[in-house]
Length: 193
Image 1 (cartoon, rainbow, N blue to C red):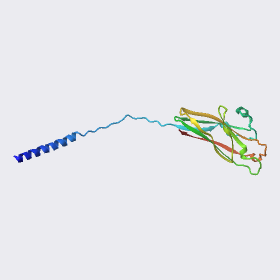
Image 2: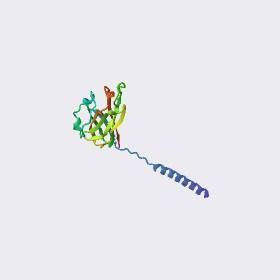
Image 3: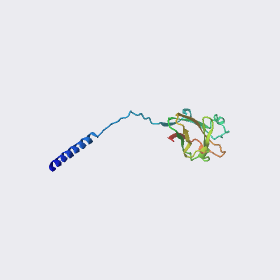
Image 4: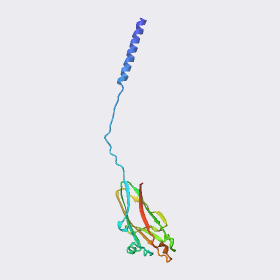
């Protein structure tokens, strides 16, 4: 009888093991999921600095004075070079922009008197308000004339400025400044906040 009990217990144990094995097989689940497609659009920020085509070549300026504090007093002075330029672009993000002025001036060393620093510049916005203070050129000039100008991110950028360049009449000999050629280059850069 004991043998029978052992056999019976062995059979019951084996069946229990098979039932547990089958149960775990049926307890395994799997699932997959997908989402709808998602459209992503990146922001944009671009900038262009362009000088008015009519002001690309100015000739025969000579020493003069900056008469008065208003823009209107100097618009008709032929010895003050008037260089209108625009900062244009588009932006969907907030940011700032900078405008850089570069020039290289080769002096005529055979003449005496005068200095490159006698060549001055002033910057005004489209409303006629002066921006910053009067600056002077050097033989090689690389300076930011506008810095950290706000871009609100609402779309189009369109800011207008006028750069005036003249030789300050300092009543000293300025022969060294005769017959020199120099080019003014304006460039810009922008960055998001």
